[in-house]
Length: 167
Image (cartoon, rainbow, N blue to C red):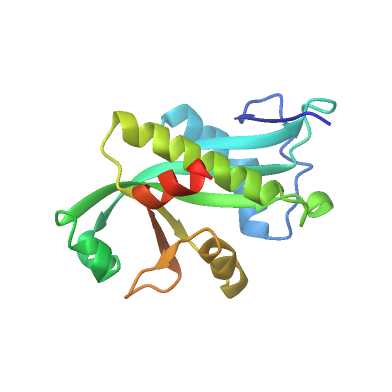
């Protein structure tokens, strides 16, 4: 098995992907490629080179701005009123391969892409919206911090990303 992460293209079989969350499945099928074409976001897929059209997992990354008043006070003091950041807008793993570490592979890749962008642009960290409590706990294991006013929004500072990727 040789795993690769690549940008979603027409060659990938989006309609066969199912993660158990209808909204995430529908986004991949109906919206992801349109957003790539319009430059709104980038969707990356995890594939096995033995079956390169089958999607094992996917993530969508975009840019965002967040008011510093919305992040944890300890971090907020370091930033101006508006913070440029990356946002992990979606992360999903196929039902067929869940709990095999593919989500973590995608998360690490999202952190690497965020760190690379931060070296070339001004990005303070990575934001994510957790749709469920279990999802929130999943992100917290990577060091994501809950935002005070929006407990389902989480923030991973760029310095924390750098430390995590050093390990």
